Length: 237
Image (cartoon, rainbow, N blue to C red; front, side, top):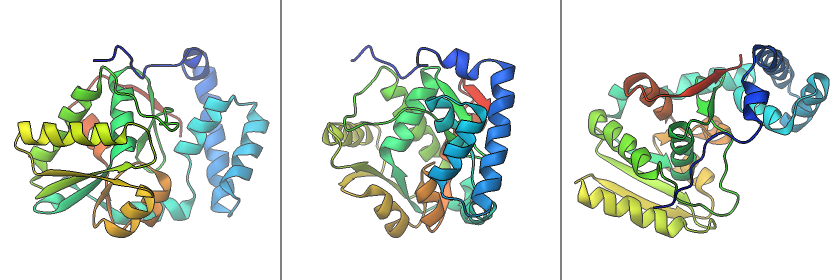
């Protein structure tokens, strides 16, 4: 097992750990929401807001993740399903999105609650996925949710171009066999498009997927409420 984890980056305490910084970030999210609601492109809006508040790159990333337009918020809310809606359904899970977010959460990294009620981190795959100490516990959290949901099955979707995606897919399948779970796993060249168009119920906090999918479930929100893991939660709106 790797001794890696996805904890805080050096400097994150300075960027997100003080009241002064959080006040600035909250104002930035509100300004970003205002601009997005008036159809400013996300990149242009984040540049304006970032320059105005003199934000660092990771702060801008957090603001972009937390903000959404009024239309996006209404659209996402209308498509969100609850735990009881999952009974006897097949759920499609955005593998790297969910897994890395849970690994970050369990590693003590900062987790950001967005205006849409979703939770996001500042990690990314960057072409290669590497298992960390918190990977088995993250998969077990998904298993706990699955057992309680009454869902008929769960399909993990991973990015085929990402290095080691085949290995984590096999790890998921092995875990499912060992624990008698009706899970499947697949690799897709464009998992976002697959989840948006091919999934009746998607599990992801990816903004594009939430905007384009048929319906979605807020897994991380559910786990934070129900399983109550220790979480370094930052609310910036």
